[in-house]
Image 1: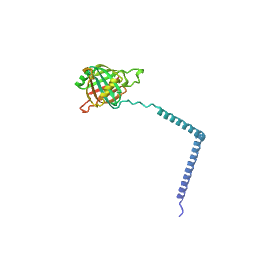
Image 2: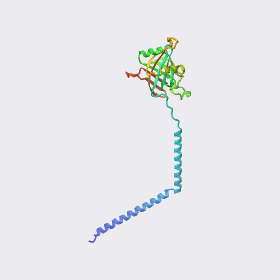
Image 3: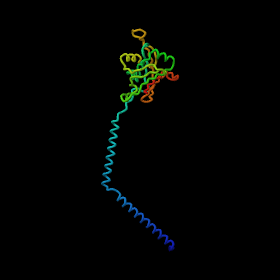
Image 4: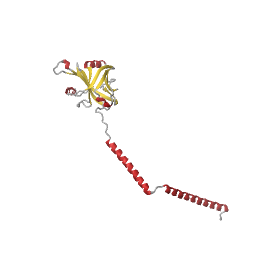
Length: 241
């Protein structure tokens, strides 16, 4: 059966449109390709730029790696979260406070307070004791000092000023006292005098303390009570103001 005139014209127009479309697309593509080739730099310059960029990246990575390796590792404090604290002093002498991470090692901090031992014992017998040791921030000379390295403190007991406290080196006598109470985990008592009379009896209190670091200028030590019947009986605060 022969095709009608309408079908022939429709077929012709469709082929014509397809040819025009394909021609326009091909011509457009060829123009875009030519324009891109004009804009594109030469292969040699492009490769040299890529090599230069790669060298720069590798150099930067090498520098960063070296800086990471030579960066000084921050020093951790010798004290842990829980430490051993010992208050001791002769009955008519001054109170000493020692902090040890390990009972068999020398104390990390040893402080002598101007408070008489008998006064502190009386305060502790009356209830909870809060001791605050304050020191002043200094200028450039002491800017890098750690809090536990401060040599002099103002001392307060339950809000009342009670003289001063000073950092001490652990000498032979202090080592002997700490060695005598080393087996004691927690407790208080009196070490008998050797031969010099009752005034040389040494009173002590020893317990575990929880260390809480507020900042580089503040630390707190809370005595851990084994019966957990409330707050700590003794708290000691170190502050740099």
